[in-house]
Length: 288
Image (cartoon, rainbow, N blue to C red; front, side, top):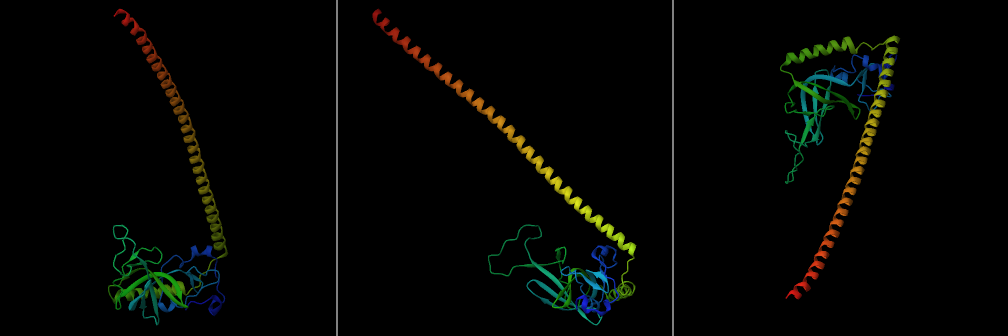
């Protein structure tokens, strides 16, 4: 059962390190081999709520690895719940998330069927949301599963990330042996850091934080420079367009003026032709 730190008497005397120390933990960024009975002993700590982070003694754990036989499988609209029995004296629920299928294998968008059928769902991994085929995870199958941790109604669950079917009992026994050694060598020994190690980790965390601030500042400055360059280009294009527009207006005015002069010239020419014709008419009459 996942419980708060105030409910665990064996927390007395343990040192719980701040999050910036977790990079030095042997368990925080590892697939921790555990038995189901030990998963139920994991507990939360104040200050880490909502992070799916649990502690075994003072070891921070977020990823676990278990092996056993699937003894039950239940289907629900948004998840499939498997029950894993690893012969440790307890079983554990393994939750496999479901999402609506939105695309086919070629990446094309799926279209809704005109018939009244239930929407198709696919299983996905807990963190990467990549598709999972769990058709082989049926009651009787022996599997090694890896996943993240969660709690439902004060009961620990594992949210499936990946799995592999174990070929035989020997593979399962080998996993039990590795799990037992890890429990003795790592989990049962409280995690300890020296003052110098903590100071070094704090400096690294501060440097990482400062680097993140600098990276963010550089990204903002780059974005600002890009915006300024785009604005400069926009203004340059605008000025060029205005110059070209003025040139087009001058050319249009010149064309209009040339056309006006041409029309005036043609009008004058027509008038002269009429006057010439009018003078020639009486002369022809006198000759006749």
